[in-house]
Image (cartoon, rainbow, N blue to C red; front, side, top):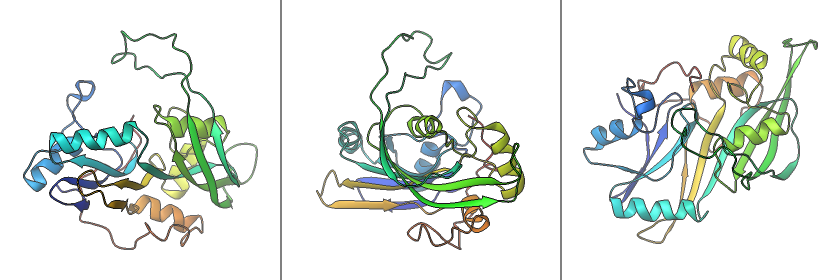
Length: 262
């Protein structure tokens, strides 16, 4: 079982996290055997240190330090919003244009992990830059209309709230396909049945940062998986994401079938 390495030097490593994988073991998922940190550690033969996280159903660039000191420096860059994050998503409906959504979010608390946290906190600032890249209308009925509309969207979060991108798209009434918590169940089922989109269609495509040791600019792109490429083909969007589209894939990573599980 291996994971795709996007970048590696003596100080840090970036991998392409598959959808369905946890970043690290959690007491909430004690029986989960496939996690990114342990897989990468075993693959390269040294310890890795997480500096940020991606939700379990989200795929894409995951950055880790190869020492605690570098991990701390990278974490500081994330905390100070010095790292630019770019995502791509498939959403319901036609979302066009280029805008910034400034919409505060109430903190989402987990019933178990956050049971001692305050539930009455004020909404936290949350800002997302979004841009519609392409639209399509497919001959599939998911409600009272005989067709269904989808959009390919580029997202750049300026803040890092829990499920920020999913919640912001839902607020705009363009929920992400495959989002079991903030999305549209009928849309999710139809997209899975007709187009193979049986996972959250959210991909962390790029990280842009300053190397914490050399000071050089570093841009890391993560290629799309088969489910994403099939979706682009179904919707006529091949060519819209040239930097991360591909026709060949790494060896099987051992990931599950991509079904949304969070």
